[in-house]
Length: 225
Image (cartoon, rainbow, N blue to C red; front, side):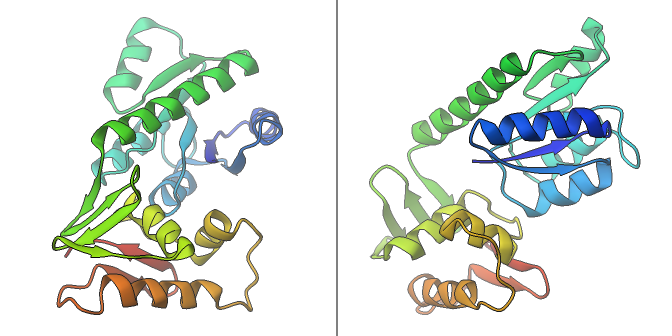
């Protein structure tokens, strides 16, 4: 599971990164709101930990902007602001939980795990994921388009599952490689291009409306025009 930390205090950010990595997570860290916004909109994350007082773009505005773009990544707000009004504002503007500094790492880890479980439960209750006329059932692993069943090999299914859980979000080749193949990006490899091409053959080839799009220099995105 991949997490995002947006924290301008580099000591706290390093502490969180190390602890969460030891807990088994892959962690991306940035130290200002604009970089955090870019990552949150372009990379798939299981959850994000976001400070409020950030340079370039404050944390609450960052959260509002990703919500406006349809990003539903669970957000744990981490802040020195501790009044009830501050906590209410953080939740009303798109946060899912709120912790006050100084904090217990074990409690923070438990809260992140609770957010992840909640997201998995909501995904299971919804039963299916739909983008345009493409439907994926994560429980039965059945994929259909316009009611027609599509048989997918394991890697193509894994890529489609990743893309359908992040509709409208551009996924970089690096992030796809890490999520699907779980190893570091080799700039010389074309394995992702080949995989996307194979998935397009199954999902888009027989249909006039294409759902998988290339964003030049950035990656790939699944969206219904």
